[in-house]
Amino acid sequence: MKWLTKSDYLKYLIHPAYLWLAKHDKDRLPAPSENDQARFTQGDEVETYARKLFPEAILIEPPDFFDGPDVTAATMNQGAITSLFQASVLTNDKLYAAADVLIRTPDSWDLYEIKSGAKVTDSHLNDLAFQYLVFSKAGHTINKCFVIHINPRYVRQGQIDPDQLFITEEVTDNVLPLLKQTAEGMVAARKVIENKSCPDDGFELCGDLYAWRDIYRHLHPDLPTSHPLNLTRIKLAQLLKLQNLGITTIPDIPKDFDLGPQQLAQVEVTREGQPRLHPDKIAHELTKLEYPLYFLDYETFASAIPMWDGVRPYQQLPFQYSLHVIPFKGAKLTHYEYLAQGSDYPIEQLLQHLSKDLGPDGSVIVWNKSFEMSCNDAMGVLHPQYKDLLEHINSRVFDLMEIFASGYYVHPDFMGSVSIKKVLPVLVPQLSYKNLAIGEGMTAQVQWMKDARGLMSDEEAQALYQHLITYCGQDTLAMVRIFEVLQTIIS
Image (cartoon, rainbow, N blue to C red; front, side):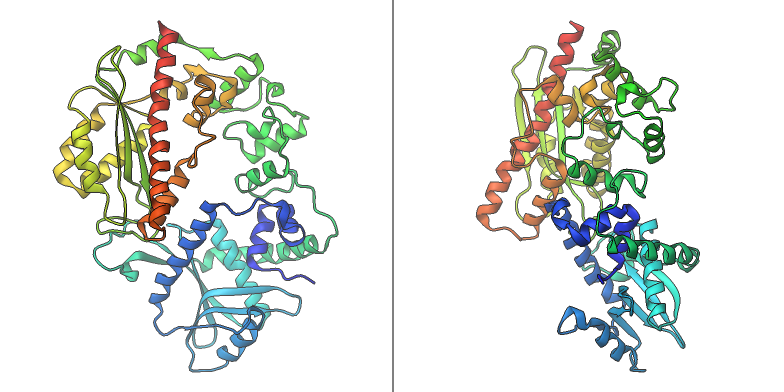
């Protein structure tokens, strides 16, 4: 009989097929990405700091993983022991749970789960409900349940202060109502594990569409782009309703089906098989631009444990920018860039360069202005001497994405998205991210932070810098080329 752990149970809640494959045929599942590995590493770092909240706690370190429950039992029976890290139990029917923190009360134990997020989620509550039941079944009385999570308002000043970095939130009243359904779910999960064949991986059994969707696509690499799963912002209820109606392609979605505006636009252009353009509205938007035109893009870092003073957990701040400039209509394109290198605090140097490269007049063109403008606001708080400059930049921002988000240009191959990664291949197919060593922002962030923490050799770092310069430069060049396409449409 295979063990059922809390991570197994959480997979079951996403989809029973996920659990079965993880236990019997894990090679069919997507391999953890580098970004996944970075999240695991971050979780370990968060746990290291959170343990400082319990200076008296003893870490259970068995000589072998399978000895953990026996070592835990012997340690818990010592009355002088008041708190434990990684206490684990294994029941007779192979239910296994390990608690991040276990604190003794007069006649019971309190469970603490350490999480690297900034708030309590349903997944955390399900995790604790599983632990509560397994520890109880192993003969231990559980009193209260807590989630220790990141305080998003914490600002680092000097050494990390764990008492300020974390919020400890009691969730007992949220966990107790889950116990009955969790107990039933554990029985059902056990049956899934014992089955000789994988459950159907379709969406009738899916508990979390967005957690399962990419795995499903991996399992079905030939899934057509017209499949309803590729409808933008699709909800599980919508997908199941379409399935019950026998709808297998986006163009076949009924005209009276309840859809959001972006979904409706995607369905209509996919059904028509041709783009929908509003040249007059595009022209009206582009008349708002004033030369010089500055095409600006930031690459940012964010981490649960702030790396420098003044920074909050998960605060997105730039370490790099690319700036393509058209000084006047018909002028030659010029390019400026800045990339922070090494482990020094990056913001002030970046602002010094930006203040020289970006002139006082003209439109600042971005893709998704809320992001770039929020970065400018945050940098203005960190460095008040640049506040006026950054506010002036924000007053000049023009969001090129809004032309597409407003439905002035909708193409079937955008697949309902207004991401530059979807728009660019359609409008400018010769300019691609596919062959870049770094092709998306999360990888850029993870790799740069790895270097900033001193985890790269000099040779690796130099190669990374070139990849980052290429990637960020492509983002702004992509905006330039898309802008040029839009100009041809209205000319």
